[in-house]
Image 1 (cartoon, one colour):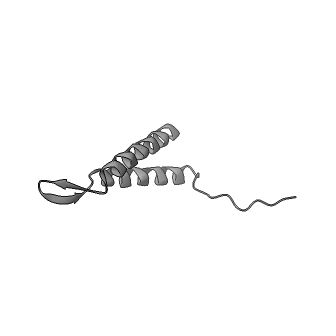
Image 2: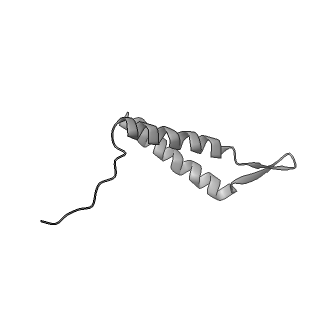
Image 3: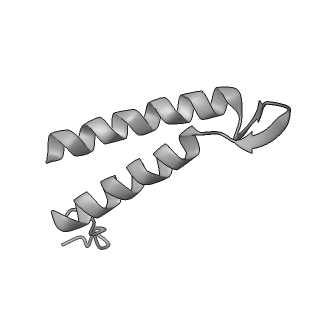
Length: 67
């Protein structure tokens, strides 16, 4: 499961590169549309967040206290 999450995070980085290069909108057949990877990015990000939650890895650490 962790391998799948890591792979998905790698995919997110690739999506971000392409979206950053192309912009969030593209011209297609004379009209402006949202970048097709935006939907894939959202679905992948959702998968990562849900998976980390299921594994109990979504908890933020509390403030550190010094002894």
